[in-house]
Image (cartoon, rainbow over all chains, first blue to last red; front, side, top):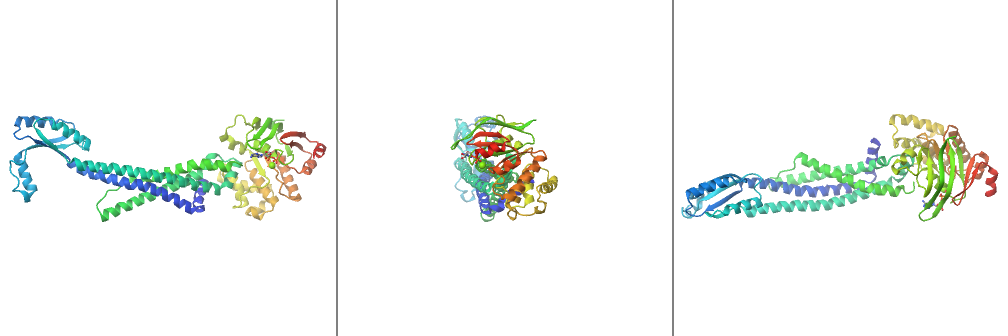
Length: 286
Length: 232
Ligand SMILES: Nc1ncnc2c1ncn2[C@@H]1O[C@H](COP(=O)(O)OP(=O)(O)O)[C@@H](O)[C@H]1O
Ligand SMILES: [Mg+2]
């Protein structure tokens, strides 16, 4: 194992440019994942805050009876999605509007604002589809005039999040493929550079696993380095945006080390696929 | 006498060049010294490759020690190789490291504990008469000395059989005699030796058994040197 490590490190020194290139492409692959992951993470964070405020407001038809309202309150409170439901009378709606929109206080009078049910949702039931379904259900009461919630921009946030996950994954996969190819050709050069040693190893009876080991270690080391680089780049982006534009959140340490691990795996597979092929080519004549 | 290796009606056909060995059968005993001769292209190297399992027979069976070409899996070949020593005409030393590092390499890559490598390398160098050249680089040695290093490396894992493919092909008369003398000493310690050569004088002087190949067929198997001179 020590010997394998020594050989792996030697390979770095033999082909520094190709090694750097391999590390850099792995870093870019994971950086793409990381950036879009960061966007997704922050949108989720924003959604969480926004969702907390997501409420559904059901406006009542004028002159709805007290009994009907009480029955509706009981019904709606029993829905699994609903955390709490309250009744806002036309009077209190007026008072609230005057308070919130002081400039327009004279515009409002009691006859303009209808009474409404104000519904807050449980966590996990705040996505657009669920909210829409609930709104539709409530709208079936005959005394409900109109149901409103912030559908457009909740939906928009969700769409941006989905897009950024897709874009990150797509770009990341392309970079990952390039990384595997580049790691593959570094390994090829490393195998050719060590053709003589490999031939002798085979001659004297080193096992295949033993012969492969330095190349696999080389791949894993490069991959992990690339992963660490990607985490660093993502972190720099995060701090840059936080300073210059707006506060963002970063991955947890566990998520960040997952990035390094992903790099190591990428490097491992890159070497694994190419080492067998190139070793066979070198061994043809041994 | 117990046979360390046996070829049983072995034929080897290469994809492009065709038949290289044809229905070859023979047995080698433990501790025997055997020459292999025949014109260039007659199949000597192919035969040695079959014995080290670098090639598999197209038909027939090759048996070396307990290993049979009929049953041995590729991934078990290293186990056989550790019990063989192999040397070539062109030495095949690693030119970027010292003589002792070349020998140590064979021990390292076959899992010898690091603590016992130094002593073992020293003993091997003494055995081949190069104790004073331990830290020389291969290019600083004569051809005969380089072949001795290669032989020391081949002996690293205490083989029961040493395969030598024209080991003196690149050497002058004096160096050739020295290498042959070394191989005899190794043989005297119990290692069987199979040496391919087209140097007939070596065979005649030794009186050892030899196999003569002719276009892939086993033409002669015996010790009668007069037969040898008649054919050539
Ligand atoms: N790897 C190979 N692929 C195809 N043909 C080969 C290969 N090695 C040897 N041969 C052919 O097999 C025959 C025997 O070659 P070889 O065993 O090298 O003979 P020798 O060692 O006696 O000179 C020759 O005709 C040679 O061209
Ligand atoms: Mg030959």
